[in-house]
Length: 235
Figure 1 (cartoon, rainbow, N blue to C red):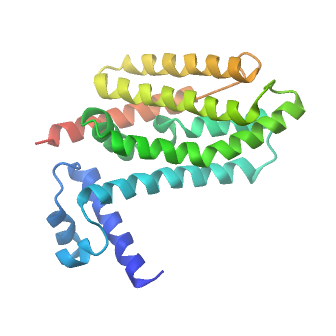
Figure 2 (tube, rainbow, N blue to C red):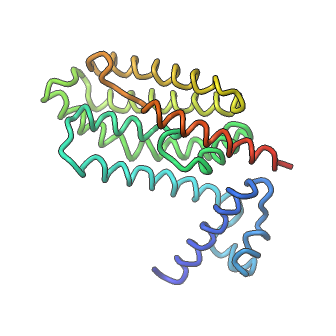
């Protein structure tokens, strides 16, 4: 890794840990500089602002999640339907990521309403997963798992449905994180999206899964606890 890339990576790592520990609002550029014994010039050579650091952290986290998915998809010989479910569950933030990052994302995107970060993450997911969805749908049609008239368009639509459901799940978490019953509403939302995707793709009833119940509950509880801690630290 080049020296400049190493410094950039160090800034991202230090900032991420500070955002997790203190919250984004309570972390200043000076805090990041102090953690690295870095000059302002050294910081601004790589990033124009704290906001730019946050954007890159979110983009990198999303890319890492999708990279892990790529390994899972091709680590074993899976049926097209199994690969479809892996792709769709990768959209589900509550099941697939670090609770600290989930809480940070929910606070910034849904409580503080930073739509730019949310939209960038969504576009990255759609851009990376759409080609995989097209491939899986064509294989699934050959295998008799799906019936799709327009696989190129339907894959993109199914991903948007899954993304909309994940968006609503995050909104529910943001609005009612302290209520244990909140996870029921999240599961209901994801199940409704599952039914819509099955209809869209001509898949057998009950064959599509957007989440694993145990992982969803565990992810919700951990993220809710982190979110409550971040909210308690907010200025």
